[in-house]
Image 1: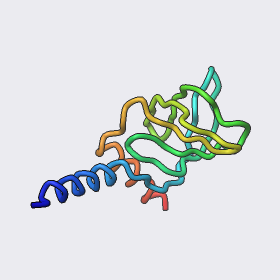
Image 2: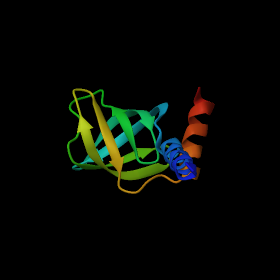
Image 3: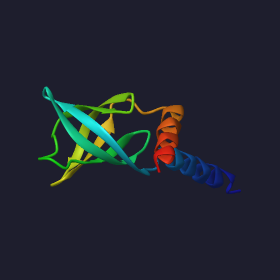
Length: 108
């Protein structure tokens, strides 16, 4: 009788699993208006990343995030004094996310 409800919940869980934040510590750079800003990625998911910006104010527009051979165009979704949340223009594939997380584990 409630089979559709169980299927809906299972689908929502699968979506959450793919887009959940994964805690990382990865040195990266944000390219913004001709400047490179050193940042540290703190969380990453298929859809975006949270970055710590140690020097100056977080950018407030479209940027390119560069790290370990990857680069992604992103929109600054939010920012505060020393962090910003980036929403990737195109999501990372599961394979790309797995490579990033595997590299993070090797560094630890």
